[in-house]
Length: 185
Image (tube, rainbow, N blue to C red; front, top):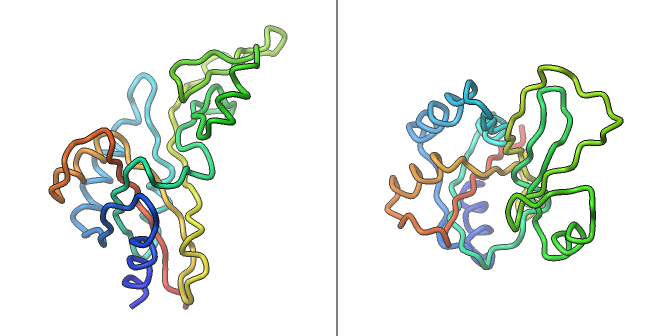
């Protein structure tokens, strides 16, 4: 019943194309594809998916460009020591703000790298990581008996798998989001 409430709440949001409960086999495929890249030169670490998979229920949401912006960046470039090297920009205002700064490089229209302070001591051997963090999903917070709500973006591989598995086109104007939550005890 709480799954249906969550699905119905999400379906009412602007920009939502479809919502469905993810199957256990999909969770296993995502685990294998998302967590097998940790030895890449700059690995993608999906901490958001790790958090979502700890929840009792996991929903797949397909969205278009009309969906609301994420409240926080969905991609970070950090070091294994926790130093933030770059981040996704999520709003036009944020992009405008960073355009005026001289301490960043734009890698794309939506991603900045921070210039390294020449006086800062760099730790030798720091490994760089792209991190896909967990993101709040406040629309479900007010539903009775739902706790621990968290969302994430799957990697490009995970997004492609989910679209293909559920018959969605591999369209850059469509994206997948995973929303995890548990039932209150």
